[in-house]
Amino acid sequence: MVVSEVAEKLGLRVLARGSDRPVSGGYVADLLSDVIANAAEGCIWITVQQHLNIIAVAQLKKVAAILLPHGNLPEASVLERAGKEGIFMLQGDSDAFVLCGRLFNLLSTST
Image (cartoon, rainbow, N blue to C red; front, side, top):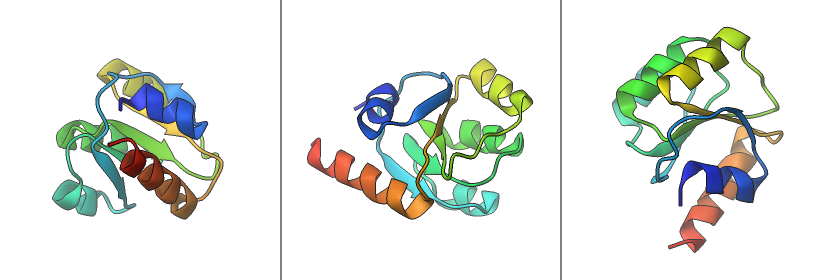
């Protein structure tokens, strides 16, 4: 399943459109060093962080998308950079726990 399909099935808003890559799983962390050390390529990274550094980390780890919980909305410069770098930025209204569970259920039933 690719990012756009996940976004549609989970009712997520697309804040910035990136490369529509296959999703391999999910990862939840707010410490950038933790994401750098542990996130898998192709995952959807759920974080409350909203600054430009998340785009650099997403590129480094080749994540499929960044998902912001609680309806969080980063500054326009972050969304612009995400689009320019081909990183999907998604937004969900639920908290990270709920989004993680919904993502897990979706991906585990699609195989």
